[in-house]
Amino acid sequence: MSFKRLDTDDFVVSADSITAGLWTDSQVPEMTTFFTSSTQAASNSGDYYLNVFSNETTSSLEFAVAYGNKQGSGSALYNNDVDGKSPSSTVYGQYRTLVLGDENADFSFGGITSSDFWAISVERSRYKESLFPGSLTLLLSGSLGVISLTDNSQVVSSVEFNDAGRVFQLVSGSAGTVFTGRNNQGYSEASGSYGLFLPDISTLLLNPVALSSSLAGGGISLAVSRSSNAPGDNEARIYRAISGSTASSFTLNSEETITSDFVFVRPRSSEFNYSENPSFISGSTGEVIYPLFINSPTTYVTTVGLYNDTNELLAVAKLSKPLEKDFTKEALIRVKLDF
Image 1 (cartoon, rainbow, N blue to C red):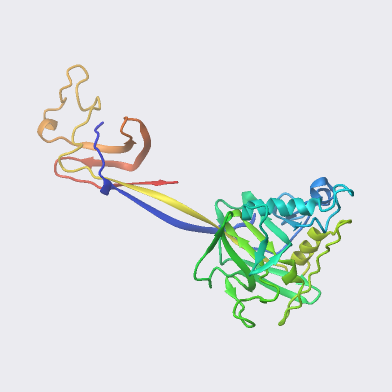
Image 2: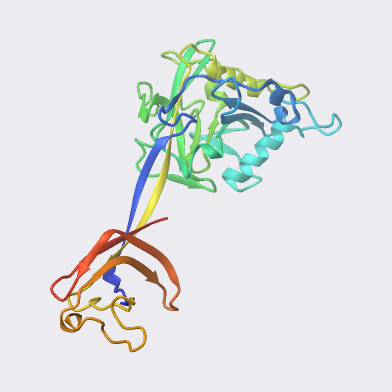
């Protein structure tokens, strides 16, 4: 075993973005079948959110939908004597803390403040790091037709950030291509954007005001119930908008940044030509066993170990086959560490 201190030039760091399908069948980025569980919908959790699966066995949870309202409207009150406190207000407060980080802040969709939203949260096990901006296509159907939504990541000059990370607007379009026929933004300035795309927390927040408007060119009318004293069935309403069309489609990919640390180990001609292996030296005297190896030794490199300054082994790299080394040969071994 021989040691050599590595120089700064021996280290190179690289980062690559890897994209993959998001849903259970990751080979297909598009989800076209949607199912819910009547058991989950009838349970206590059904007052807050509705799980959506890709098959009838409900074994592959893909995402959940929920409705949040600042005033607690759209769902039954916890206590009829306490106004404004209901599952919808709880959902609103949870997402406000997660996304805005301020219990006094309001959600804004394309510059228009809104007191409620629909949330689509992708199941955490469906991805490793985040959602992939520009891969979104979500079809929503209503009484006036079908609308296709995407994010505006491909057209913005600078990225917005909040407590949830990157923020993009949901606009009319497909796979990152914005439909800019009306105002070059993909949404109506009067009602705001169709929501927010938050890739770093795998969440879409949909703007009911914009979705409920009658949009030129084949929009939809998706009504939201804001009654404060009775269940509004709003989770089921957005689920039906997602799954109700014969052309139902939800396309989205995941994204992961793989950071690689490349370590270049360079055995020079004068280095690593002798070995402490018992087949090379005598265990009793420490002398080279074969006289030929005194002036013309030959070794075979099989393993590279990376140590810290306190001689602790941190990583081991195995060569695919032994590498012959003597005074006439130099080598370059590249070790790749992914994390």
